Amino acid sequence: MIKRSMLLPLLLAAGVAQAAQQLAEAAPQAAALTAAALPATEKVDVAKGQQIATTVCAACHAPDGNSQIPANPKLAAQHPAYLYKQLKNFKAEGGKQPERVSPVMNGMVAALSDEDMKNVAAYYASQAVKGDTAKNQETIMLGQKLYRAGDAAKGLPACAACHGPAGSGIPAQFPRVGGQFAEYTEAQLKAFRDGTRANDPNKMMRAVALKMTDAEIKAVADYMAGLR
Image (tube, rainbow, N blue to C red; front, side):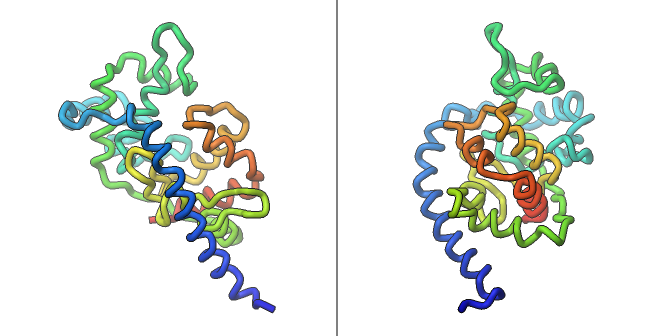
């Protein structure tokens, strides 16, 4: 009989192998889906992006992208392609409802040009993130297991498969989640689960979140806050 102390390391090792396989399968598809969202590097003006960040975005996300408000995500060191895509998704165009609905953000991006969004995304990506910390020691092992190994019994993949062992994500494909506020991550996972957020390529995050309970979401969100 395998001792309890040995069981988690074995599960995590299996999870890493599963994560690598899932990542290899998902990466080509994700790259194709996000290629159109990549900022044109040669046109990016970080100085102009900083001006927008300090005058338009700072109240909620701080001038350097290290928000002090758990409801508002940290943007520092986030992949520029991901930030640009989110800004595009918040912007209503052609009289249509934006792909990502937020009364605050929809208004904030309304006056931003495509060039503005690329510039501010590049600026925030260039900043150093001041990560949050995991706070609930009672759920840290559950959060670690879900993040690194998932739950094969219900077809829940490891978060590390797309977001990496340290939560740094994969540029142009999957966002950085390490060090993010647990409260924000929890809210987004629940939004994906109930469909109020639906801007994930091929419903990838919605399919994952549907398999998670409130307790699992809270545990993994707290664990991710402490990743570096």
